[in-house]
Length: 108
Image (cartoon, rainbow, N blue to C red):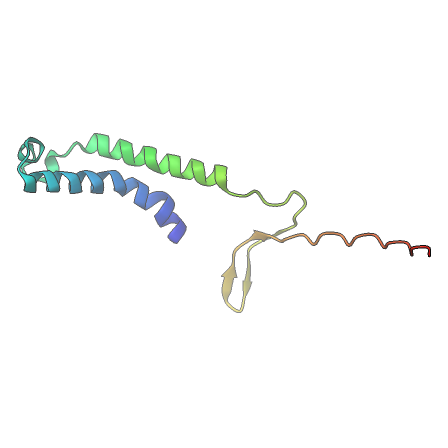
């Protein structure tokens, strides 16, 4: 749930929230931008806000995939399974590095 919130919901809503916050601040200051907005949500540029939100969500998903550390090449995959009524997500198991070869005894 947290992953969906961070990668989808927040990036989709962030441009609209920032824009609304900025308009509210400008309206309180009494600047020209603040006077143009009448306080109704219908008058906002929703096309641009939705486009910015989708672009930000796409960028977030792309960077998540790009910056995620890949699983080890030969790591075995353990599929999702149920343990005591709880669903355990699938994962790649960490591989145990092979033991180093034994060293021959040193000669005196």
